[in-house]
Length: 112
Image 1: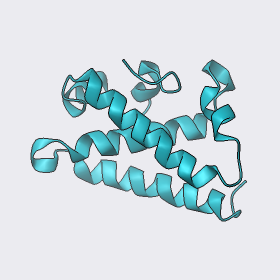
Image 2 (image 1 turned 90 degrees about the horizontal axis):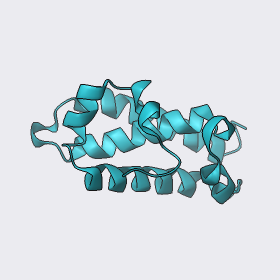
Image 3 (image 1 turned 30 degrees about the vertical axis):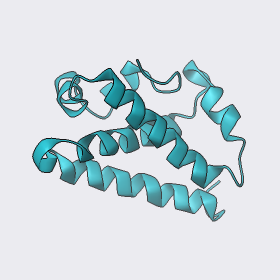
């Protein structure tokens, strides 16, 4: 149960299968919520300049690989935030900050 924009294979680039199961706490609901939150967060940055509905309705190879990667990073960050003892938080926080820095650049028109 995940968003149509983010697939299981998209996570394999960023995190291993076992780590994903632990991070998502084997809850499809928690994972779906984190993915939805990630896409909405990205849309909030991009909506003023870009058609986010078109961006997130793309499938397969039509999707921006960079946006997919950042969506996965942000979703993993949200999933990690709910874990006991904030396991694996450092790398997730670092990747989240990199994603939001890129989004801020796009929003400001410095990155196109």
